[in-house]
Amino acid sequence: MGKSAQFPLHVWLPDAMEGPTPVSALIHAATMVNAGVYLVARTNVLFAHAPQAMLVVAAIGIFTAILSASIAFTQTDIKRVLAYSTLSQLGYMFAALGVGAWTAAIFHLMTHGFFKGLLFLDSGSVIHAVHDEQDMRRMGGLARKIPITYATMLIGSVAISGIPPLAGFFSKDEILGEAFKNGFVWVWLVGLIVAGMTAVYMFRLMGLTFWGPSRVDRQVEPHIHESPRVMTIPLILLAIPSVLLGLLIGFPPENGLLHGWLAPVFEEALATGGQHEAAFSLFGIDGVLILASVTVAVLGIVVAWRLFGVELPLLRREPQPERVQAITARAPFLYRASLNKWWFDDLYDLLFIRIGGRIAAALWWFDRVIVDGTVNGIGIGTQRIGGQLRQVQTGRVQNYALGIALGLLVMAGSYLVITAR
Image (cartoon, rainbow, N blue to C red; front, side):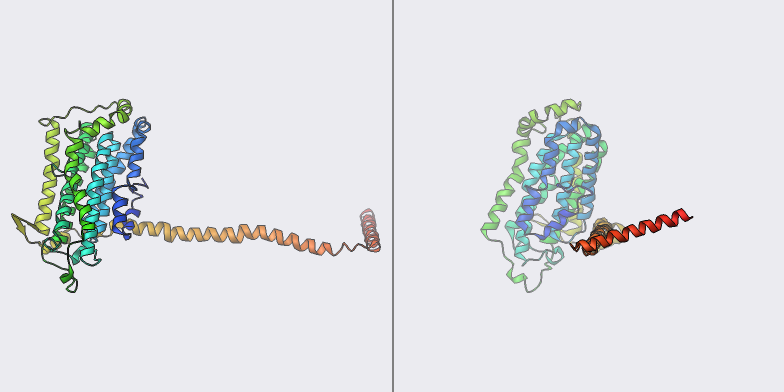
């Protein structure tokens, strides 16, 4: 949960956006956050013997997915939107692991790696074009000025939204389908809602960044240009698997190359859980589930298109900021909650920095003054007593004899006093 930034240990990942964008792409798409998903998948046999633990994994995953998607709605930093998108997609993967869709989770991990790496490098190209500006409110109208970045980011946005035949469609739809067929209808329903939310916030990002009138600083706008080839070639190379990977390793659905490769890995876990992967039926329940997920994703894109505009060869619509403001005015609490990330940062600051810091300071004072003070006091007292006693040891026999005589007199006097009573 901590490694893959699942609720409630999710707050660190968006803050990691302060680093260079290629590093962000590496963290979000490849090496770091995927480790938690891989670990659960690799220990599938252990989890298969603990269905209650798998239920917890599914619940945490799908809650993280919808929580992060709700926060991404209102963020204005282009990299922060993608960061919360990563949280949401990782939630999808954990939900898949929890419902026993082991192969689907790894499938989505692979496809997500390509289109999320693409999206982050695209955001870096955008930031480079507008001279290190990350606020999408100060962008707009960039589609014609940086066409390669625009085209590849559009591909990544369509892929993550789950529109066929791009890679994200196959893996996301397989997660939802397996959740429904394995009896986790609530996971499927929340995942379906998240699919629509993903399409909305991703095409909000596209609208604010590339479409509509330019809001770029007047001093910067004349200098906007496409990134050099050293930046655009990786975008093109990542766009290719973002389009084709699902077809190459995930087709036919639930029976593609990846499923054949991973079947021996998850065979024992599926047998332990009493699960079996039913044959895919396009004209059965699978077709209905695909239609539902694609419809929701398309509706999300349409909503974003109507609110934030679109500029395509055969389609053009101006953004309508007044409608966005009117919608947010109807639900001010939800808007503030999303904008403030549901106040998790503030809550953690209160609990762990303020309250926790004061408790830690009090404990440090107790340890320093009471515990260490007691130990040090005993040591100092012993040292001082020893220093005083050391003066008695003069090395002279006469002094010792005098001491013995005085001691005897005291003992004799004490005896006489006691016996007189």
